[in-house]
Image (tube, rainbow, N blue to C red; front, side, top):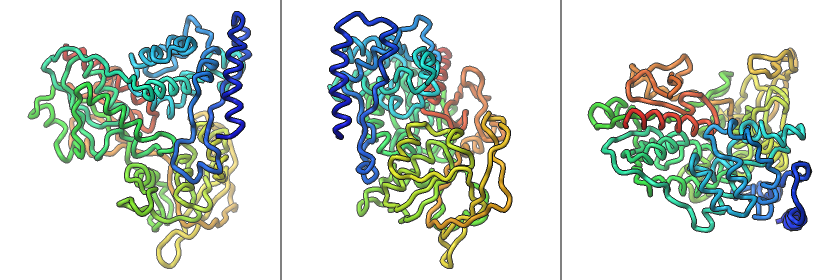
Length: 492
């Protein structure tokens, strides 16, 4: 920990004591600055897989909680996909009742340690925060996500994680397909009502994108495992290495295995590519494959991993979202000497979280804005040697509201790379829809659902990325909760 971080945390205790020596008015609350998140030094963390953000101290958490105005209309709750009572839990933090805060969060969210780390609060619950709006900056809103993480971590480190109550057995059975955030959330809410729940997961570990996609340095896998263990303690069964659509047809779960309802939360795990010449060369990876090898199969454990990863020196990452940031920062930790992110717009248009971009820059990732490749060039052994890159300028806004990238003719240049990671999004895996023709999907392969998450097949529901496309953990959880509510109603 740096001297600066120690000063910040010591100063939080002093400031908290000073603040509470007199009545705290709304005007005073507005003058309290947001508490910075302590983090590993960039020069050290770029060489290890330890978590980058270190979390608030109790004094920092209580000082940050003092910034909340406890608005009666609670716009932050409206911005939360799972409708956490945000003013309620922050009020408990302000008073030092951290376990009480955890109880409030757990009423609607069983994955707070995960959501507090990876959810884009700045575009959800923190976006409508009254404090942020008054200060004309979402970055100055009450740091809801950091407080949620603190509460969850405090509960866990103090051995106070409680297993939610489960109602008396109903004799009803529900199958959950996919152990990602949507599936885990749906399973928890259905199990609370006393129904038997079995989760079918294709991988050998539960967690979905939280274990194969998000790196250890951003989301330690022990946290994902501990959340899954809570469900096991509730009586939820896990069937791992079970690929619905191949191991067992979807409709067989209903017709032959006796399940009364099914929820599909299989995510969007089919990677997109640029469709440019040379993408079949050795050294070109989808972000999905690269991150799965590194995260789920632990390729970063050199000499111990069963599936070692491709050795890289100069890495190009194509894309501007969170997955691109994860890929670039992972490549650096796996030993790359130089990592560059190529994005055909500017930083202002990047969909990645600002915090992730800032961390990447601190760690030495180089950003080449307004550039995108037109072809991958190889050597005489069929391996990546370079990219031909075209420059762009921004035109008028497109359907997304972002300014459209316009290619500059004749601006092609050759940039040397030995590894290319394509991180431009995912599509839905067609296995379930191809083996279940009764299931209606759109032209992108996303399952079509109604406002209650019900599919075209009776007693089959779906949610998360398989419905939304590439979304966020918390949005997937929101759909899982909505589906659970509908399933519980039909099983009453």
